[in-house]
Image (cartoon, one colour):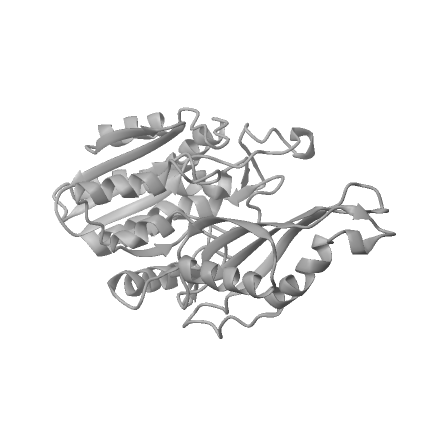
Length: 375
């Protein structure tokens, strides 16, 4: 077994279902400390975070990842135990293989190799790991970023190891992410008998025009590499279960994925104004997952583009697609952020996997990025 495959298997064997780290960070910290890194364990609430640094001063390059995984679902649906890593036909199977224990292991191996070869490198190389990326994302990188800001810790560049590739390793370079804002709407009506609608107020009927306006709204035409902002209604619930009762309340959930034309406070104000215009008796609760971020042309993007082109044989697609990542908490510190990782076709699925050849190439890819930025 190669070093990176061996470490990935060790991590997969620890069932670190969010927010449980299951000892992954302790194992990693022992290796990094032996390589000369200063390791700080930050236990925040029920979440483990690891901040490990080598060198000093600027520039500061952070390798960002997470050790937690999503639940496996029914183990019997898998071809093999999701927490017993198996290699079959050149493919490694196990929960977290692609998202993102393979990348975390590759970060560690690349960092060890880099500092062994260049112990007096310029600036600071840091690894930041959390066990709260797949969960609520409250006590993980979000809180660590606040601590770093309070300490005055500058970050110049951040590479997140999220599985970003689509067909082949290095075919996509993520240079930003959309913001995510969720709304939880409760509309009040008056319950009554369907035969006497004049004695009731049906919240379904009352809110329908407002929801139709929200869902049909054209928010913008996109922003540079970002698609247009979109709103999706993800759940509606009303009724007592009886078809002869007008419900007294309706609950709706919706989510906006938005580009840098917007921020959460402006979107919230727009939607609340719309609901007010419709004369609804409502309550609205918001959850701000994170603002959009975008890394413009600069040293980080140009270096990453050149390194990935060397690996893939072609210029990578530069994208802001996908969901959210913990880089949304690092970007506001003033860091330029990119995401580079393995193929994402199987993440969060049964029989999650990564090609062994891709996994074994990943430390070299990350090491080249680090060398170009800190050597």
